Length: 357
Image 1 (cartoon, one colour):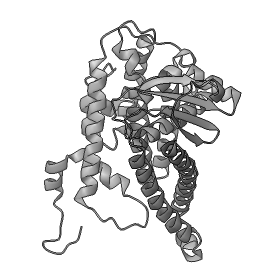
Image 2 (spheres, one colour):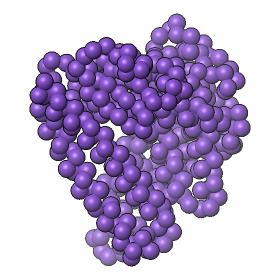
Image 3 (cartoon, one colour):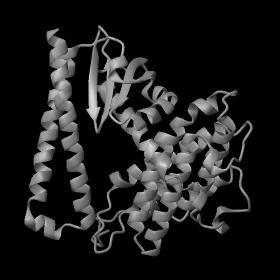
Image 4 (cartoon, helix red, strand yellow):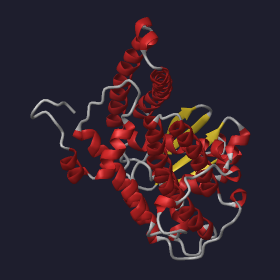
């Protein structure tokens, strides 16, 4: 904030507009050593949306508080609950380490990623079938884990967003008068489940390919589709078979996990990535020409991004001056784009073949 007259952001006005917690989290996320903070309302607005995401997660939890809850040992809980406990443990470990090193920006980033992308986008979606079906056998474990992880996450987030976390914490099962005097979360050895996290990565890869295919073929989000899944590794194919109910739910369709030789004959678009093959049935009303045009446009835009990132990473001055985390992020992004290009090249050939058929 500049001291020049008329060039100052009034924090009281910002708090009235976006909320105190959003402003606090913005400042923490930007607190990188040696960095001049360029505070913009657009950034604060983004963290207000983050606060709204947390509210919505709490409201979802309140909708499913009623019903039996079973506190099974972590190792005996169903897959989604075992996975989120392990990821929460990893988040606690990372955030505690960053806070002890006074890297509030990295701690805020780890919190944001865990809550938005893992807890809300994946976990809450994974447990919906168990919570929405009163007779589902996984319901009691899901309800217990949902409350356990939400309460722990609120204590983890409290130093950054004290007001929203206190408000939510008071409305869920807890012990004590206030979140302010509760113990900061510590890692629980029993929560670690590296094998379950590996299974989730396989699930995430398969669902991402299905979603990519849906977008490419312009299927409406709610439309039920048929898709098949195969993997070069027989062990991973067995794991995918065990995850089939989750694949069908997240892919919003009918899932068939089997070797490609057993797939029913049909017009299919196959998407391939790291040993995994997903085949989506192409219905007769799909405009393959438009799908091909969308794919070609995507590839052209990605080619520009690849050229830009490659140029940066081949620039000796940039590599010498850029922080290590920036270089890591750029290299990971480049690898991801290159993998997407390879997959889309195969899909483009298939679409051209289907058009000619």
